Image (cartoon, rainbow, N blue to C red; front, side):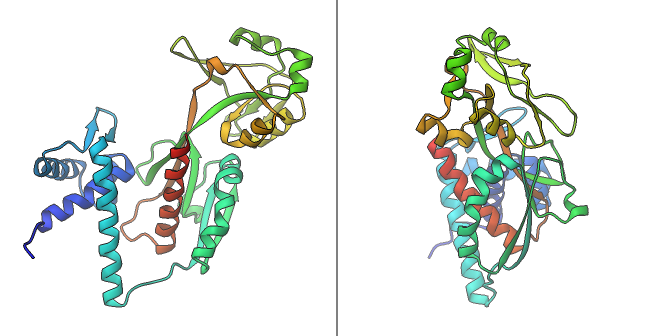
Length: 308
């Protein structure tokens, strides 16, 4: 068999996959122990070899081209098969084990991750999962966490950040509340409604509601007689019992919207979202249980985004 790839080209493919997964040349460089410039040069060599652009680059971000996305999927599968072949040959095939400590926001925990954990443990029964549900920032090192999921994660050079999904927002209320208070037709109508508030525990600041109007993004600070803090699901429960309007993630209330117990309002102004991000520490020797869990969650992420 004629040789197709030298060591440099194989390294470029590995760096390309890292950059695609992490969404950043800088993050890929940190994970691989090289400079962002080295990552950029490696991917440039790969693009020159292929005669095709793999990334669309801006000053702030990168994203895969359509061709780059297909190339990534095949390269990732090939690299995984190579690793497994080496482990099998050398007798180092291991089964993930030990305790995995993860921190989840209540919304994403209850409605996205917790329902998946029984399937994860059926596949990997030697992994024990220790779950913290809450919305405060954690100290990975001091508190011994392996992984966290957060909304609007702050940049942190010590962490790898992988996008999970932009979760769409909806404003909902019960049919009974709308019959009593009327259905809002414009954003100005919110001033005449009981809008359930959520207060950030870290700052005490109330979250603004996000809308799109005439192709312009708007943030509105609403008012109401109910304030919840720490757990967003409290606002959902209040809305389900007729307390007023509440803006929340569509994935939380999909069942209620389907059965009619909640109604979406202000649909012409919808379309905004908030990003959820998976975070874990940099490290060239990631524990197998963590790598396995990250791969498992990203497998589910592709299913979620395909449904949007």
